[in-house]
Amino acid sequence: MKKRLTLALLLSALTGWAQTGLTNDGASITVETGATLYVAGAVQNNAGGTLSNLGTVQLTGDLTNAGTLASGGKLLFSGAANQTLTPGPAATVGTLVMANTGAAGQRTLSLPTNLTVNSALILQSGLLRTAAGATLTLPDGATLSGEAPGQYVQGNLRIVRAAGAGVLDFGHGAALDRTGLGAVAITRTAGLLTTNVSRADAPGTTGTQGIDRIWTVETATPPAGPVAVTLQWLADDDNGIASFTTTQAWRALLGSASWAATGGAGPASVSGGTRSFSFSTVALGRLTLGGTSAPLPVTLVAFTATAQGADALLRWTTASELHNDRFEVEASADGRAFRRIGTVAGAGGSQTDHDYQLVDPAIARYGTNLVYYRLRQVDSDGTAAYSPVRTVSVDRAIQPAGLSLFPNPARAAATLTGAQPGAPVVVFDAVGCHVLNVKADADGRASLVLPVGLSTGVYVVRTNTQALRLTVE
Image 1 (spheres, rainbow, N blue to C red):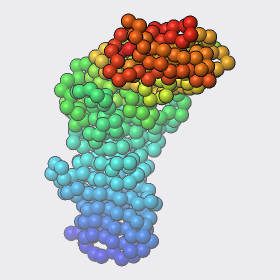
Image 2: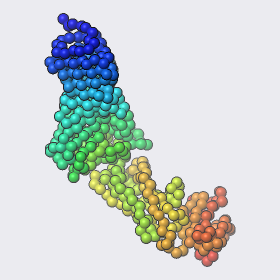
Image 3: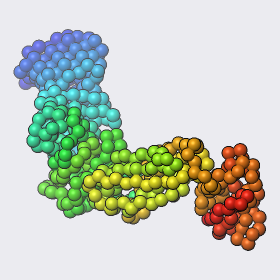
Image 4: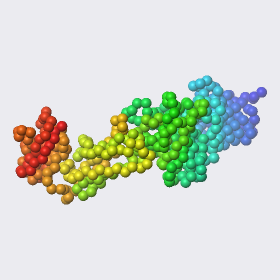
């Protein structure tokens, strides 16, 4: 028969003792090696209190620590309803066992703050769920066992492994060849049904979400070549995807939600409630899986804009592409209103680097000291995404001679450059009627604000003996 008593100051060498609730208000409580303290209820370790566990502490309620929790032994959560482990700021846990016997939806152990489990995380029954921003960490040498449908870690589970060689199964659905990568940490975020937190998503499209698991891979040394990776997940995290006959791995940079295909597409292996998919990738970061029409199809790894004499040279590089139809290069004189100045065909589908460039000639025609550029990447189905903006300074000392109009075609206004200072500038329509009269300023520029309602067509801009055609859209 189990004995029950109220524990006020010290417990040592207990075997098979039971307690109905336990509150420690500043004492030191020790459970020695081989001993078991069973608490039918909650454990509250208040500020100033110390709970040292070298044996087993089993409880059916919550564990809240505001003092010192040093549990090199085993913490066993065996309630019949949801439980919470609040480890507090000074806590160490050797082995954590989840054995909640509650009904479905009532057998979750919640972890509101970060926790490190130094020896083993054992899942026997129920779910362990980390709060937003909290991470459960298993350092090098710690093990994970027992994950199965309805019985796994939801939220952030981080597993760290020291440098080594060959393929290593981290235990939480990720295996990779760590040769040459140094120490590796992989954080799996799963089961939260939150876009770009636990699942990938392509903005502006329909039906393109990946599975409800994302693995964030951090390595001491970047890969020197393709890395073999296998990702595994449970049916719980299918995220509504009905078939995995065509599966695609997706990658994003660390901290990014811009996804691109990596590795080839193919069928996932499905066995019972578990699925797995293997691929190779030349870069790591955030990894997930989905259908072949899932997240954004292009990874843009570089985009530069530099002055080249009187011109601007635009260069960009992609690491991978899928269904990439084209890049539309856009320019702006003020950083707000952009217009297309050129189009460069995309590679369609590719898993290797591609370099692109476009020259924008005579950028002094913009009539500004700074020109803004961006890329509009267009997918084969019309989906578009924009790059960051780059700028190029205009060198007035190498401006080409002659008149220039920008933009051309125009809608409401255009700027003429290269005129004589103070010279009259006149805009005529196709039959020779005056549409606009202005004067060039001291820099030889003239702002042509077109009358409201002006018809579309071709007009002539004349100053002294020179003239240019202006197309109004």
